[in-house]
Image (tube, rainbow, N blue to C red; front, side):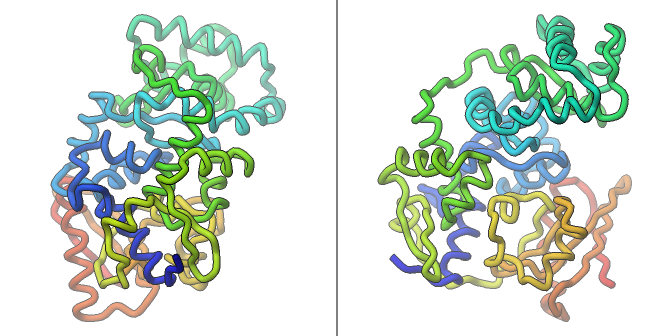
Length: 370
């Protein structure tokens, strides 16, 4: 089947927002369903990660999402690309083991740069394991203090690396914040009943979840998102089998959840306006973002090409503005920077699109234009 770029963009919007899921709009009732549908969600920036859930769970507040995380519907860890993601709690271990191995293989070089030995990294794991055993939960600064008490130098980036390494090895995971700080727990205690699929099943599962939540997308997109080798990416698609459909977009081979072709129309796009966090999977989920972002706008969305994505306003699937917010006690002040002409009714639509976000953070919206 051949899809136009506009049809492909409409399907991406639908699947990423869970609207094309079996059962129709509103199928996802909570955090666990959202993160399982998408497989994993970028969460390096916690506030952005929480709003990524909020976009897909109308009526929820940030407090609701945090409460679900306390119920362990999802957790944060480093499953792939050395970057923090939300993942389904019971899937955290196999995801780290499957996709984190290539990043972990480069840890020795990073330790050398930091002046850390492998023996020190192993010692740090032992110290943290002992401190957290029995249901312990420590903030990041408390973890570093525990290490320092045992004579382990955590200065510079050493402490962060040791916490990352212990999580990448499957010892730790990130629990919800205590105050404004990350907190850490033992993964095996936080999730005592993990799912343990065989390797082929794991590859097929992550392939299905990736393309189900982001398709149409290419095999290269999938390999880039997961950090898997090209061979493993091909194997995952093969294991997913008939659950995935192969379609072409402008002559390029792509994949998507086969169910979507039967249950959802091939939309030509509409003028729906969405406000997304900077690190939402709508942009982070692909190597090639040309369907969503005009070339001349890329520098505004990723200033300096440094991996820090600005929050975006999306209309009909295309990024038309960036935005920043400041929280006060009762208001959220939102500064919008248009990337395309927005006047009159267009601006009114954008302002209305910020109302769900204001409800999510439980503040009154104050939208400002340049």
